[in-house]
Length: 427
Image (cartoon, rainbow, N blue to C red; front, side, top):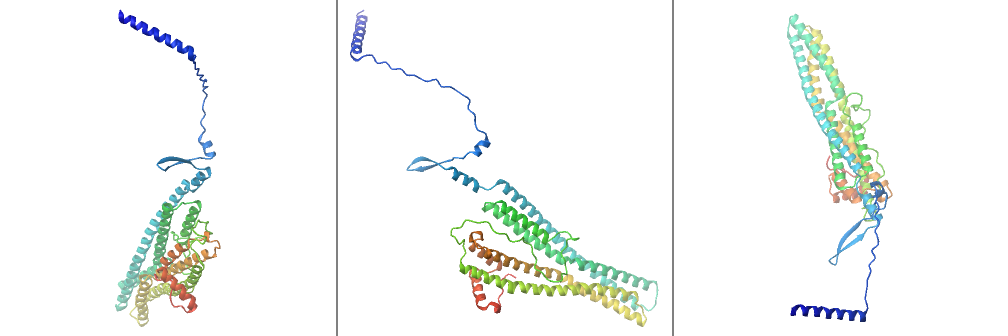
């Protein structure tokens, strides 16, 4: 009971104290007004409107152990988007790359097939010719005339006529030259395939790269056709012209360089002019001269083979044991033997392939000549290929070191027409 009374008295004293305090200090009241939030529908912009707006991106970096967020300007963002490769361009380059790989395989297979044509036709025609000559000799050595002798003469005559027709066809199409054309096409298409791979791996391909790759594919298709009928290259032209497998040199697009000269200087330009002169005066002219000699020899052999088998066919038809018949038999035997020798020299020695090789080499030097000329003709150095890179490529293609290439240019500037050295050390 005592405890209850003490508690009530304590509460009364607290109440009186707080009352006095309120009187002295005054009553403090606080009111917080919370505004009503009106909710409304939020519309998100579609993807097209986002692309049309200026894009703003942020980059977070660490500065003094603190994260700092930097706002990038819209121009910086747009430049980053411009520099990124176009997916459509990459797809086009991959499509061209697949087509080029397919052409590499086709030209390789066709080249092997035509090389086999050359060896099989050479063996077959020589076998037919020598068999016919043997029959003529047997018929002429037999004293009596009979059905067996007549059969030998008819067989030899037919075999010579068959050999004449086959030689006419094989000398017209020149299988060894056809095989060399396909080997060159395989190598050049493989080179284009490697260039496209390099562009896709280290560069930012553009529509210009797609256009250049397409032009090179079409130029190679025209320079080295696959069909024989209608579009086959002329095997006996009136004059020797270098093979051309590249499109017309176009003006290069402007590239960014560390300096304003893009790796070029006056001394290097003079050296390139001297090397260009050596390529034209020595290398290209020499291979055209050799090509003309190979063409003349091939023409002579191509006409001699069918002519000899034709004469042998006439001699075998009139071969007999009589005095006049012995001369005819001699024509049949000697003509067949000589035809085999001529056929072996022409197709066994692959004279047509040698001519095509000389023509292709002359085309290679003309290509190098035009590449140097197109770079020097461009007055804006930013549109040229980088000078140091171009010099390195030229040295590798000519089989020389950089110092050796510069020494050649210096020797050419001193001796000019009297220079005995060729630009290329590879062939």
